[in-house]
Amino acid sequence: MLKALLACVFSLSLLACSTAGPPPSSSAGTRASQSPSADDGRIEVVPERYVSQSEADVELDSLATWPTPDGHTWLIVTAKASHELVVFDADSGQLLRKVGGKGALPGEFSRPNGITVQGDRVLVVERDNHRVQVLSLPDFTPEGMFGEKQLRSPYGIWIDDAGADAYEVYVTDNFMLGEHYDVVPPFDELSQRIHRYQLAFTADGRLDKARDLGTFGSKEESTALRIVESLAGDPAQRRLLIADEDARHETTLREYSFDGHATGRALPAGTFKTQAEGVSLWSCTPDIGYWIAVDQSNPLTHFLVFDRKTLAPRGSFKGTTTSNTDGITLHAAAMPSFPSGALFAVHDDKAISAFDLADVVSALGLDPSCSR
Image (cartoon, rainbow, N blue to C red; front, side, top):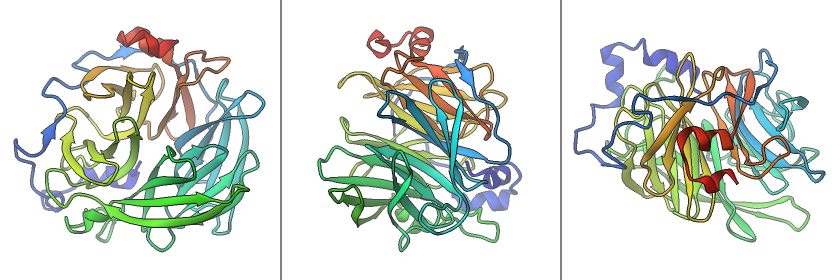
């Protein structure tokens, strides 16, 4: 989360707020639904199955899971303040190890933020090294890096690994202007909000090449991406959902195609009461699934659920402890402690929470195929 910027959001003068542009007109863009927001005033309570022990002074942010060869599942989390990766056992929340440290050499990190796992590789976005680093698992051996020449202030990452030999990677680039880096760039520069790369690997798993496919982002007021961090994609629908955090304008999820076209579709105004943060796809079957998005509420985070195809709201829930959530990741495969899979979330920058997906299905009355 952009904490310094969020603090500014609620203390900006009217003059400063004007840098984000005028309010959108009622006809701006196409809304996914004109129905009430996903919670509709009703927030179900789904107790966490666990909340891990707190890790002080690390500032946890984003998460990804990796099934180990011996049948366990690792939960790998970026730690921005301590410049490392923190590895937990996903079934129990037990801390397993920490990897890295501050620096610019391979295997070191500077303000790691976004993270994703592809096969036996983990890709880590480093804001202050202006790059994406690729490491092989389980030893976190550096295998290459890319983006140093193009990225200015990268945050989030999503990878389309549908191809057999090459993969397309999307990275959000949240560069800001002004003395305090709290001014949204002009519309012309917002066309550089998302970077695309095509990756190819050698037979032994090392990064062979990263082809720069350019950038995208709308220059139009109604569809522009003002403050971006999290994004996720649905290969079946060829759809990207990108969280725009700019509460000075309108915080929402905006839809883009895989080729970078702004569809004009977004969640209805007022869906997010505070700030749109993490977003993840819950794919139950090839045709059935849901999006889960974070409304970064206090004292408890609200998790909003939307239909995979129509983006219609399907309910919302909160835990009994989890608050101030940045990143989430969804692991739909069975694990010993979570036969139906689990949703993992950052709690207050210093711990991780786990929700059983079967509990979410039951509480919200979702499709039973999602709890099998």
